[in-house]
Each structure stands twice: as structure tokens, then as C-alpha cells.
Length: 101
Image: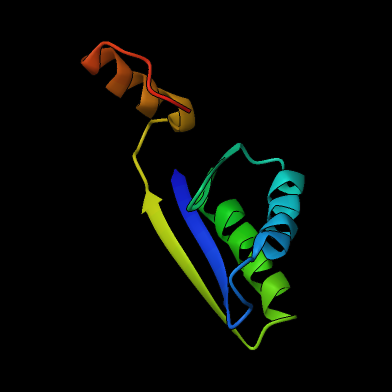
């Protein structure tokens, strides 16, 4: 399954790149395949592993902040893997062009 998530510390000011960096270190260390985009992180894996990772990321930011908002979007499709790449390739094939990444 694919899960896109973002974690926003509320009241932390207009720049949160230090918090994002902290979360991405945890994501990278998890060993799960992932991609970063300007609005969040997409992780691919089994339910328990992905949710355990997101819980760990949320808790890491919550340690330092009074309020944290975590948004999670799940795409769970039976029998599919490598969705991080295959979903984009499928769209590119249909429109006949490589999309910017």
C-alpha cells in the first residue's frame, strides 16, 4: 500500500524544515521505499510497518511541540507492489510524455 503523510507542528513558525528533516531521518532509517514531495512524504509498505513509522514520526515531533497535526492518505490496492513508480509510469504512458519529478 501507499501512504502519503505530512506532519505539521502548529505554532512552530513559518519554517519547519528542521522538523521535516527530523522526520525524514526516521523515514530513511525505516528501510521502507519512499518519495518526498513539497507537501509530504509517500511511503510504500505493509500496513503495520507504515503505521508504526508514522506513529514514530508523529511522536518525535510531539516531544518538542505542544500541538501537532498529522495528515494521512492511504491507497491500499490488493496484489500491487512498486506503486511508487508504477502509478506514475502508467499515467505517463497514457499521456505520452514523461512528467517532471
